[in-house]
Every structure is written in structure tokens, then in C-alpha cells.
Image 1 (tube, rainbow, N blue to C red):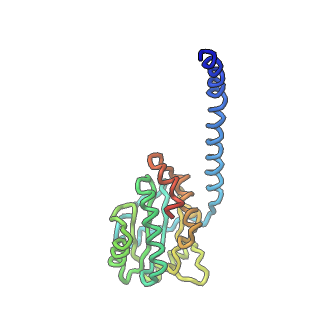
Image 2 (tube, rainbow, N blue to C red):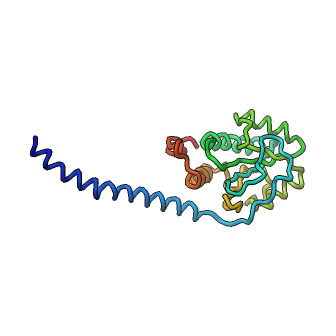
Length: 213
């Protein structure tokens, strides 16, 4: 038994000196590569337009957003299908990132029924009344012009016809658009947010995020 222990000791020492650092380096390097790859997928669609001129009907969009990430969406309550997909994904995103600092989700709604529409939408999709989730009211012209200013890839569609969101990074640059009706694009949004704003205390959510989506 003593000989066996003596034989194993050098192996353990070698592993601690060589093997463990090598494994750690591998995971660190692959994590860095993944983060770099995710960041490189970002584009530049200009600076985020000022949304503070819009009437806030639910939640609160901070007056100073620099240093924060923002996901901006457009809700058309009359388009039940798109609104449902958007609501389900917003609920999922909020549940995954509710403890994340410097992350905000804001939604532009038509002014014709803005407050009531926002409240009904939040109730339907179990969205709490919190500063992380804000709803902004815009008249028909502004509703369309904000989508244009964010350069949404709508094609022939109008804002809110598809659940397309714009992602704004911490420098307040619009870096990417995602169609939340497309599962792969929704997963891409989650992955990009999670590598830029990690959740060290909720790794279980990160590991299972694809299953939840």
C-alpha cells in the first residue's frame, strides 16, 4: 500500500503542475474565443435615438443609459400572433436576466391605447411592473419613425408585424436586430447578452437557456 501511495504521489503532483493549468487554460481560451466570436457578430447601425421624449406608460427607462445594454421592441396589440411571440420571449428573457445589472428591455406601443395595452400585455405574459421593463407610448408617426431610426429590417412589414427587436450596447450603439419569432435568433440574443453581461450567480440558467427557449 505504501508503495502504491508513493507511486501515485508524483502523478498527482504532475497533474497539479501541468494538467490542471492546461485544462484551465483550455476553458479560459475557449471562453474567450466564444466571447470574441459573439462580439464580432455585432454590427453598427448608428447611435440609439433618444426615446425619452416618448411618454412612459409603464416602468421607467433611465435617463442615462450609457454603460447599459438595451433591448428595444415594438408592440402592436392588434397583431395577436406577433404580440404573443414577443410577449412569450420577453417573459423568458426577463426571467433569465432579471438579476443582471445594466440591462433594460423597453417596448414602444401605439398611443391610441398605450397604457391599457401595456398593462394588458404585461398581465397576459406575467411581466412585473419594474424599471427593467419599460413601455413607451408613441403616436402613429413616431411609432413608425422610431422603427426606421433603429433601422429595423422590416422589408414590406410595418413595426409590430413581426417581433423584431434592436439590441443596443453599452456605448449606445445599435449593434444587431433579432426576430424573436425565430428560435435561433432568439437564442443568439440570449447568448450575446450572457457573454457581455454574465450571470455568475445563475449559471444554471445559462446552461439551460437553450432548453427554455
